Structure formats: structure tokens, C-alpha cells
Length: 181
Image (cartoon, rainbow, N blue to C red; front, side, top):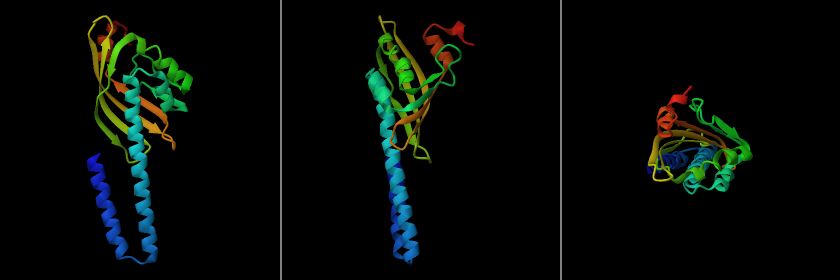
């Protein structure tokens, strides 16, 4: 985040320098550029905050909070479900039906974020994170590495969440290796 802020400050400083040496048309264009940069930065930061809120809602095992972060027709996609895990779902009812039964199966869920980036399109974030899920009855921890993309609408609601995980690690962790398709 600090690196992004430094880049923005450098760009804004250059804009100010250029504005001081421009004619009125140039100043209008530079001012528009400055406003566009500030707007994209605000959108990026809002969406990174909402991405973090998604993981916090999972850690709190709060299905209402998870659903509330999605747009009405938002989708959750698991491209590497491998025939064992759900491929995803769509809409508030689907998101609730996906997550609500998950939470009672575990004692604790942790999703520490290793990297989070706003993309060139500020409506998209990319996240690299760990998953550590404590199984009930002292059965240990399931751990996996994840990558995800989030796409947000203009109001900051998730319209697409794509979760990429290692299905072999997941199948092994849940004793389902023989079921991989």
C-alpha cells in the first residue's frame, strides 16, 4: 500500500509541475488526469478494504456478513473443484447456501493475507493468502495456499470471486484423495 501511495504522490507531483507550465487547455486536461488518478486510487483502496472484510467475515464464520459483501447476482467460482468440492454458486441465496453449512464443521478459520493488489482496473483485486482451518474434535489443521481475484461493482459489492487452491492438498486434508476426478 505504501508503495502505491508513493507512486501516486510522484504522479501528482508531476501533474502539479506540468500544470504550472501549461496553457489553460493543458491545465484542464492535467486537472482531469489528476481527478481520474485520485478517483481510481479511492476505488482501489475501497475494494482492497472490502476484500479484507470478506476474509474477516470468513474468520468470524458470519454468513450474513459474507452475503452482504456480494452484489445481488454476485458469483463465487472454484475453477479447481476437481469433482470433489463445489464449483461455485451465484446470488445471495447461493452464497448463503454455500457458506452457511461450512462454518459449523470447523472450530476456527484463519486466512492471513500475504499479498493484496489492486489491478490496473481498480474494480479488480488480486490476493495471495493462506488458509488454516482448525478441524473439530482435535483432528488437527487443514492448511492450503490460495490465490483469488475479486471483481467489484461501482458500489464496492463483489460481483465475482474466483478462489484458486491446490485441490490435491484439499483432498488429502479432508481424506478425499480417491475421489479426485
